[in-house]
Image 1 (cartoon, helix red, strand yellow):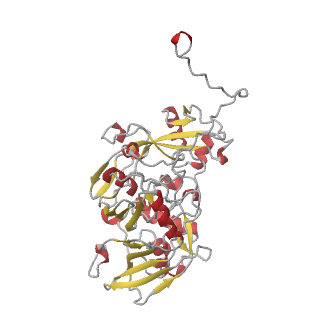
Image 2: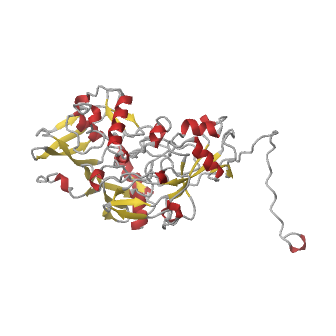
Image 3: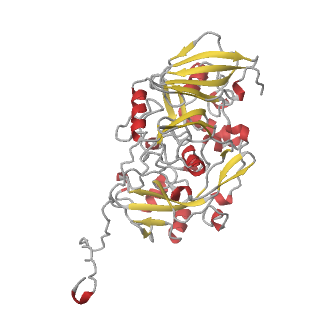
Length: 478
């Protein structure tokens, strides 16, 4: 207390002297370590079930990022028009008028404002998520160290791209009270099967060392087109990523070296069940190698499509440029109204060029720091194993690593908008939201299943198995 017993006011913060007409940019905030998803994140919205699908009620959400180096000296309008073309400029003008765009926590009044280093941007959007299968996540093992689940097809492991609540991490947190899990390895969104999480950083580190030393044995099972050879088949064709945004790879001499061992289990006269032992963990490795061998997975929504040509990519024969291939794949799904299966929207195809830092939005095989105020978003350069990230400063087994920077859609990485309960309310329709005005065809539950399943993961001290899926039974018929 000061003289007379009154409390003295805190000293006013010193303001930096600015040149005439200058704009003050506050210093960047310190990173908060150990960020994980908790009750506030889970309460943003709620699920409902319809037609065999798990759906998420639309909700308000903040995308946040610091100004990228390449944006410095450019107007906000120019950045939107060149890098965030998923929405027309009219949308961003309306969003600014509605107070949904903020620069250094102040409402943006003028989109012509020139960006400076350390500028902090916040964009509040009305967020819609694609539906996933309503099939529940089965918990195979839970003890003091591990949680092992049988992941249904169509579910991403962790928030990325358009998915946040419709992910394994959020469903486990919201419905099973399993929080602060450490991701050990990944499965493609359309792949089902054994998925492991560690409960502590120590356990995660121990298993990650086994992954690095190639001590983790993985066994998958799939159903492929045609009569697969009876003898063991080894494929060592290198794999190259064609598109991170759409999530497409192909065999190419310039690709990364990899190896998969295949053994046929059964043949029903039309299709074969094949055991797959990947010795490396490239993106879509099993699927690409099977396509190359002329036996793509029966219902693979990427590698068993007409877009690859009459031979569907067998022997690496495509006869299209990468751009032509991607266009043909997108057109084929567009004609079937199934772009959602790829995890993309029509609007995404109009957005900025490939964002290789952010990885594959459709399968989420790469990840970046979740912290919403981390300019160094730590993009993965390559996933030498799907179980780990090569970038040492950004380990996949960290629980701060569960979200992916989403620059292809809106501004930056993810943070919550307070007060979202997920109750049915006016929040489900938003006057500025383009998605609210569109009626999309729901995928059928059958479309959300791909016949590739992680059957077994074995390490030095553990072995986890799931049941053989119905479609892999010898007497199964479509």
